[in-house]
Image (cartoon, rainbow, N blue to C red):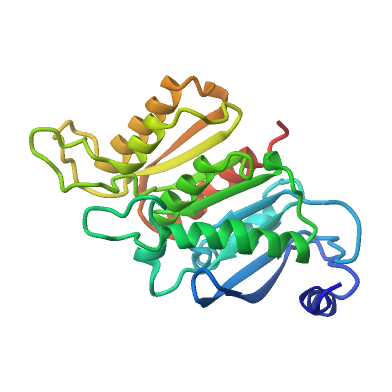
Amino acid sequence: MNFFQKTVSLILGHSVSNAAPSVHHFRFKSLALNRDVAYDVYLPAGYKPSKGRLYPLVLFNDGQDLPRMHFADILKKAPLPPFIAIGIHCSERRIREYGTMHQADYKGRGDLAFKYSHFILKEFLPHLREAFRVSLKARDTAFAGFSLGGLSALDIAWAHPEVFGAVGVFSGSLWWRSQDVQLEDPDADRIMHDIVQKTTKFDKNQRFWFQCGTLDEEDDRNHNGIIDSIDDTLDLIRILREKDIPGKNIRYLEIEHGRHEPGTWGEAMPDFLRWALAKK
């Protein structure tokens, strides 16, 4: 047992036996990002740090927003199987660390996304698997995020289906572009769409959950009467279906009057968690 595991054991005691999930706050020193990363751990009732079952794992980008969604209350009230949730806090470099890892957008945003993916895959997941009793199986591991954090989660998960069996995208920034909007083809140059379109090796068993609110934004760049966030999401789902991803592995939730804010994402959260943790 290493120093961190001993610290966790001391914090948790012998078990977490109350009906509500317990929330714990930690920091991790990332060499890839050259900074400390704050994160919150939501442990199920009855969790014992020393031995026992392995739990499904759900990671969240922008984890600092989970309390604004009353995430702990959602876990307490929703009929969900036991799992471990991790809320990774963003930093002041969010616009640089989130994005698509192999290409910044046309303004140079997301230039640290590759380093963020290295942090997730090579540093943070091994740390979590050593410190907590999380399953090592892709089918038990999901990655989710909100807005730009949703794009980041999707990009990393799509590239690594051997690690993440499911991904959740809340109001995803799927407009992320390699060029500014071109009037002659306003839907061109969307980076995530191009990545998925051009990928030849992928896992058809990977599962995808998307959410949009009808008031996510007001922009309608192609003037088809549908806001861009919904257009971008439905277009990406179409590309996934064209790649023969089974319909049962894709879920789209549209919330009437839903906005680009934690209140709406909290409203959608039980649906995502039930879907992500459903028996495969």
